[in-house]
Image 1: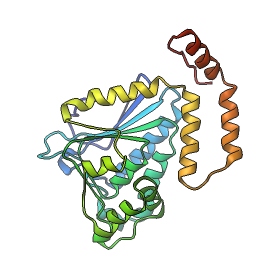
Image 2: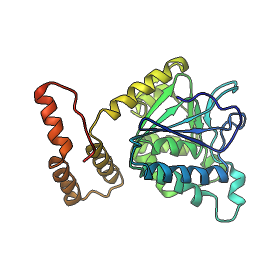
Image 3: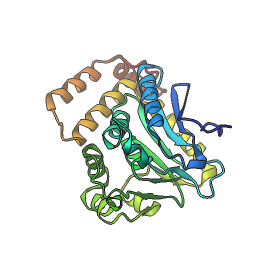
Length: 262
């Protein structure tokens, strides 16, 4: 994970060794997202998507100096009054994150609230810290949540837990999130960098083409867009790929495969 930044700013993107790290960077404001931050996130997502060297995106936050770590306090509700912004604009950010080509990992190094919970759900995998909480206060503010966000909640949480999130606005603790299968692992703050790195390396060791196409298919199935012909075409494409040939050869020779992504 990157070192804390000296000055607060819009989200910061760093790319190295096939990994893009995207850091929310307003710790004194509990990393609350303003409309300018959302535009920056979209620009960073485009940069990551266009960089073929990036195979993993890590979303995390700078929590330096916070009494209790907060990954993100959500969307600045004052932004609802800005023209062409509000919930409809915010919805574009988790939707775009969910559709990115690289595997997306959220290093949830603090509590998370409101719309930011959907950013976390839009990631493929999540790590969490002991002691954090998760809360969705939309109905407590008088708001019906936007459609794709509700779909993600039902898909990831299940119907009963999604109802609890929205119809009580009560927070979820780490044990509840783990029981829902939302967190790959939970650790103390000092152990998060090593835990994250181990997960990143596991993903990087996989065949890039197979991972990319499988992620796409899983996302489609989760959205109710199952198409057997499309999935079968991807299966056939990967079975004829150089990576699959290399994977079989490496297995037979008891060595680590060297994938090329085609």
